[in-house]
Image (cartoon, rainbow, N blue to C red; front, side, top):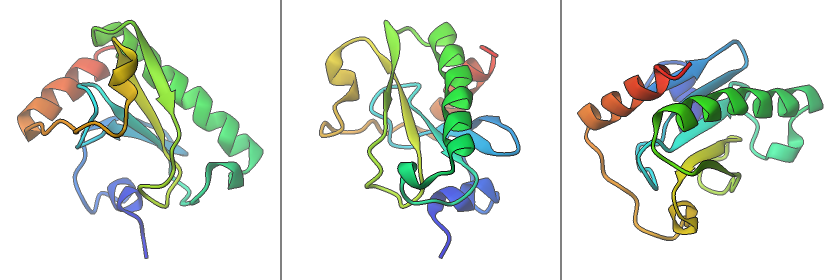
Length: 130
C-alpha cells in the first residue's frame, strides 16, 4: 500500500509543495513544530533512510540543502535544523525545521494547527527564496 508521501508525490492528496525534481519532493508539514517546517522526501518509496542507495541518499541531502537555504532566507530563524526520525511514516523523510531555540525541534511538544491559507502563505514565502 502506498504511503501518504507517495500519495502526495502522485498528487492523489494535496500538499503545499515547496520544491521538486525527478527524484525528490519537499512540502510543508501539515502538523508542523514551527511555521516553515518542511519535509524532504525521495520519490522512491523506501522505509529506512540507510536502505537508500548511496547516490539517492547523497542526493537527498543536496536537495535538502537547497530547500534549507530557501527556508533560512525567508523564515525568521537562527538556523535550519535537520532531523531524521523515520517512525511516523514508512517512507524516508528529512525534517527541516526553522530554529530559534532548541525546543523548536522537540518532537514531543504539541504541533501547530495551521489553516490551508496559512500553509499557502508560508509556502509562497519559502518558494520565493529560491
